[in-house]
Amino acid sequence: MVDLNKLTEYLESDVEYFDFRFTDSTGVTHHVSEHSSSVSESYFTNGVTFDGSSINGWKDIHQSDTIMLPDLSTAVEDPFCAQKTVSILCDVLEPGSLEAYSRDPRSTAKRAEQYLIDSGIGDCAYFAPEAEFFVFDSVRFAVSPNRIAAEVDGSECPTNNWDEIEEGNLSHRPKRKGGYFPLPPVDTGHDMRSEMLSTLHRMGIKVEKHHHEVAPNQHELAMSVSKLLQSCDNLQNYKYVVQNVARAYGKTATFMPKPVFEDNGSGMHLNISLWKNGSSIFAGNSYGGLSDEALYFIGGVFKHARSLNAFTNPSTNSYKRLIPGYEAPVLLAYAMNNRSASCRIPYASSVNAKRVEFRFPDPTCNAYLGFSAVLMAGLDGIRNKIHPGEAMDKDLYSLPESELKNIPTVCKSLEEALNALNDDRKYLLEGGVFSDDLIDGYIQLKSADVEALNNTPHPVEFVNYFSS
Image (cartoon, rainbow, N blue to C red; front, side):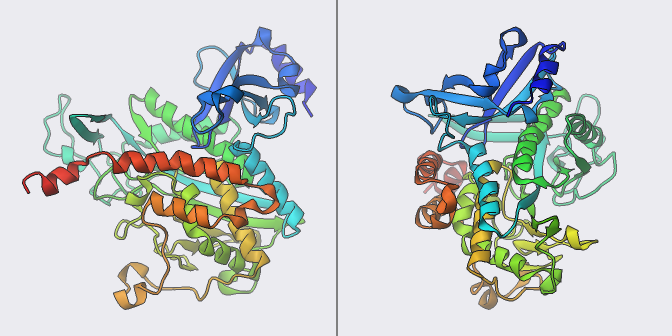
């Protein structure tokens, strides 16, 4: 139902534009701005028509009409527009029937929430993503017949220590892998991150803290825990704010997992708990203060981790982060407070704060699809009582090869992940949350990324083979 009072309030205020936004299969947000004089109640009951064939991986041109239906509960004043603009997130529907479009990510997240309720296991899934990002001063890249190259530069790059800089080289910079929690002047991004966090707060998103991350030029903001759908919506706004505040500071932000060679990449750790009747069902008397349901949830995620990778680590670049030696959680093991495991049981100050943290996802993930897929895998674990095995309270990075070979791992490439998704999809289809059409279309879309990388000469190949 449309909140007519809220809509009337907007229409009678000095709002000049309504910006309607939706998310495509890859997680990219698209938008159209309507002048307030043309907006009426019908926009919120009948939707806004757009060309679905122009969205990569969606409709064919002969059936291109598509509807975006604004969700007025997501309305927020855009802090970056010169004219007063209210942005509103939309669901994507089929024309005529106004049923959810099968490949709409936001509708998928809604179905996942409903499936949890219908399962009887719980009535609320809470998610808290920790999306890391890099901020650079300059980024150059080219892919052309005679040039394949990329270069990033930022004020904190240790490679600048010997450079001549016009205003002077002050040389307070994090060392490689040495950027965790430094004070200014080593941390040059403090004020910028504060601006990002304050902007999110003004937009009505609950926030907690910000800090410098391990690599030079790497940062993280922390949002408070939210229900699944709201957490996905918040993450879309998070990325929008980070990139636009960085631009206002004359810099550029990226959520690309591994933009820098031989340093830590950006992950997106997922903190998850399930609740029922106002209480967490993840708190109990098993390992780490977890319930059996929480352990089974971990078991389900581990069982389906390689197919989940297609959604939680959906870029070819994702797997340049998922390699040993850079705090990347490649081993499917769990333990308390152990950051070398792909599932950590964080310290919790209260029973209701008990949660599990999956550490292999990264911020190229389309939250609506990725969070929904993780929930479905965990619910499959609970339904079928899939135990994750014994906890591993040891430094997994230093295990001998004889032990390592017995621990399952995440995928090593996007191609592996897409093949795993193709073979292991049944758990996603339960309750009609995902569909074969969505999964097949997604695999086809992301396979193009794999083919593009496989077909493009790489600078490392010049190093290895040019003189052979």
